[in-house]
Length: 187
Image 1 (tube, rainbow, N blue to C red):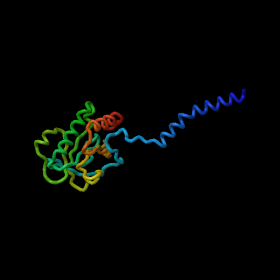
Image 2: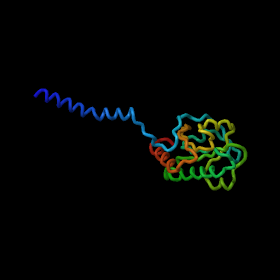
Image 3: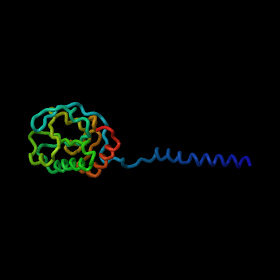
Image 4: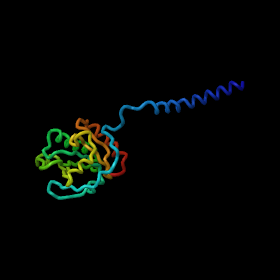
């Protein structure tokens, strides 16, 4: 009789430990192929301070961009078809956030000389357009090749968070931003 009781206790202990052992095995040996985010998660780090000039020639510092989530694209003033598609994505991703739309800013950083087409600028009201006084500052944005191939997300404290490639599905950007705005208390 006593051995039956001991056997039952050992059996119950083994059954109780089985889910824990299974969880440890899954954690150690199985890794999901993709994360929840659609953009590439960057090593979170603040961008160094910078001075910019807007289209009218007024200067401002990067601290004026703090306090809101920032969708950034770096493009030439000539703005080809890919550039225009990114500007459209920035606008649409912001609009889809509904009541949280005011927590998001859009920034087109100009790389190179010249000014963008005034008709293009008029098509995107509220879009900030600026050129860094030190063009080398644009190298602070991590890239796989050319920074013109990406859209970046910067948090309200000035940290780089995500990078999206040219072929990004804007629905993925919407999903990422919706999730971040939901859990974030800043911006």
